[in-house]
Picture (cartoon, rainbow, N blue to C red):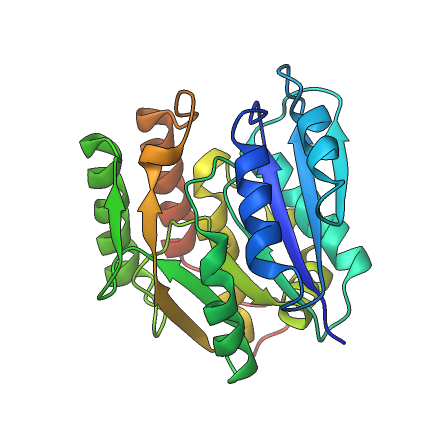
Length: 252
């Protein structure tokens, strides 16, 4: 039976992980087989211990970085590890580890996968989606980035390019990894999820969105997003995507 793999990149989330994993267990246990991979990015607050304690209630494994390497590195590790473990028929879900994303939404995302979608995005920008407790500067950045990517790098069915809450058909993610390897993730920090989505275009996936209510007000602790560095990272990603491609040397 296909397995749902939940990948949680985490840095100093010892307070937020236990309530999130409790919600995962309550919503998913008995509904479908699942495994949780926590990618602890060199946390200093006992994130790994908190995850392992919660692992008594949900099937969980922790992969640890010896030092903090940033979100992009944690996502790369998560993709690499899940591609080694998952079968093509499985589903891979990425979520933020700060308890701002509702795991209760995943069954609806799985319905879309079962109906034929290759990627399902939990979107703030479709009817029924919204953000609660998000600072206005961060809201403005997400919306501006969404408009730019929709205009300059359009993907059918996509309005929310920057959210970290997505479900992938494992076969698609494994094909992307086979194509790119570690270079699937080259961007920095919070632009990484946009990068993976843009690189997936080459495989012509069917993408669907479901409405997300982002509960930033449930998150404990400060944001790890740096506004101006994230803006710079999105600009670099756009510049790279819009750069003219060199023709193959063997082309006539």
